[in-house]
Image 1 (spheres, rainbow, N blue to C red):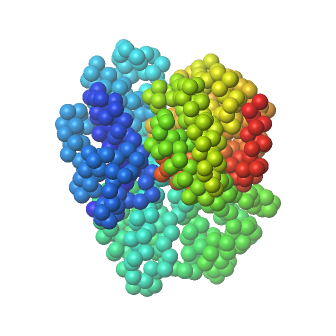
Image 2: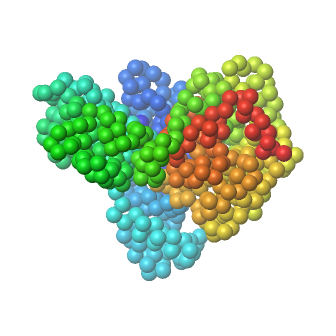
Image 3: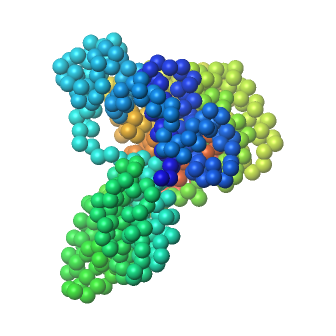
Length: 575
């Protein structure tokens, strides 16, 4: 069975979790987490790299030991090291890590002090008031655990968009090799670029007698066949992702693509529009009586109900129908519109590449500029920069800008917003920079009022350019902190600073709805990779997908500006 990068990364993450529960060396734990991150962001499958004889130790953060483990996982689907650690720590403990904010250290304390091994045991202990008795927890944490458990009860397994992409692209390529296949396309929430995917819908057009359905259910990654017919089949992959494939006629292809792309709410309105015209709309086409009048293309379906084609990312019934009817659909931003990236790290802090390597990688992707924004000193785990080291880095930026062609580096910092809203470095250092990216990295559980006021005070600082990952969430790992985003957006407009759309697939922060709110308020957003390696620059496409879901156009995005237009906008915030 093929092993994808996401599968290898999952093994390394589990090893890191188990090591942390065991209280192992933090540097060893970090090595596994960094390796997992490298693999998730890798644009090529490590299995293919091994087949071609490539040296995996050339990848960032991958030494000989980890390279050997990657080879073992690709060949066997697991690692001896993982199986050994599973013997030391009850496997069910890793289930507790699915609760946002309950990290390995707290899991260890729950197991050590209360013998809690499962989610059910955790819920019972919290309901009985026993969790608060553990040092470092308290009544507030206990209530939070109960709230999280209640929220997650019966929740379907979902896959981050970037992880789903690995499985989807491999399967689509496999299906395209079937005899008689003409078109293969993924629909559903995947096509709408939602941040997480519950299942995968794939549509196929094929010549009569095509073997595509038999080939589909024979896919090496299929764990269970749920249904197998001549036009529809459903399977569950070994990764637990359910995939449904439908073979549709070319005459119905557009109608089926529109129907299975969704969303359900969007489709309900389209069917109502059809009914108002005396028509019937379904996955087979648009009908007047028994006669099909549209369906071969999506454009024909939308035209048949009096609308222009609507981009998939907008199909959430959040005003797109009215906008289409009025001729006000946005011309959505595209990856090609981005001229640069205003949030990137180097190995001076917790990045994995040098400044020159980051600059050359950005240039190779067609970017005109890159902001070097390593962490400030408070983030000790990331080796954050103090004023002396920051000054040394600024000199390095000047040296590189004097020698590089086709790319310009900006002097920046990702400065911590402290609990009281002050910034982690003094004005006499921040004033030397081209931009300051402010970020919350601590005290996530302040009250809504305190968290909001903290961020507003930081934005009022004379040297503040962009608010990074504004809600602080990590998808499936950490809930957003409680903040009044409407106030933050209004304040950004008044202050003249910007908000970030963080493109890392685990963040995708701002949310799509907050992007739309910022657009309506006239606040420009910056789509940034938050790259910690040259590979992470490729994540900009996910940020663009999030921005498109938020109705953003090229003019709404700060870093679509060419260098000469961007400089005055940045300078405006640094005074």
